[in-house]
Image (cartoon, rainbow, N blue to C red; front, side, top):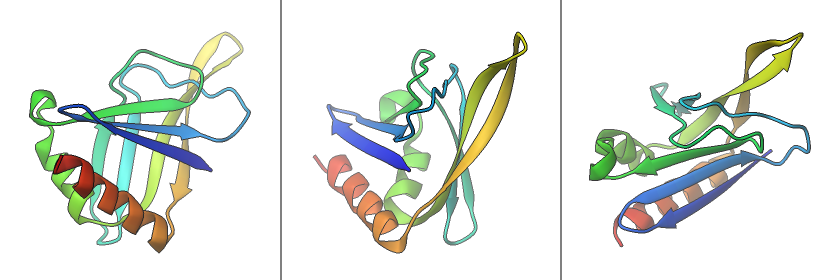
Length: 120
C-alpha cells in the first residue's frame, strides 16, 4: 500500500510513500508514471534528494513549470501509479518498478484534494 501526504505552501507538495517495512530507495529523478482511467499517462520525477524510506516527493506550481501535470491530477481520476525504486544487488544498482492500483474512492479523494489545495 501507499500513503499520500499533501501540503500547500504557495506550491503543492505531494509525498507518496510505501507502507511496506522493506527498504525501498528513491533515487534523485526516479520516475513515477500516473495512469488515468481515460488511458492517458503522465510521467513525473522525484524532486528531492535520494532516500531509502520509499518517499517520492513531487512539487507542483508555476515555480516548477508543471502546471499541465497539476491540471491533469485535478481533473482526471488515477487508475494506478508506477513508482521506480532502486536496489543494490551484488554491488550494482538495479531499478524495479512497482504498481499501485487506486480504487474509485481513492482516485476521487486524491483529485478533490488536489483541487482544494490548488485553490488556496
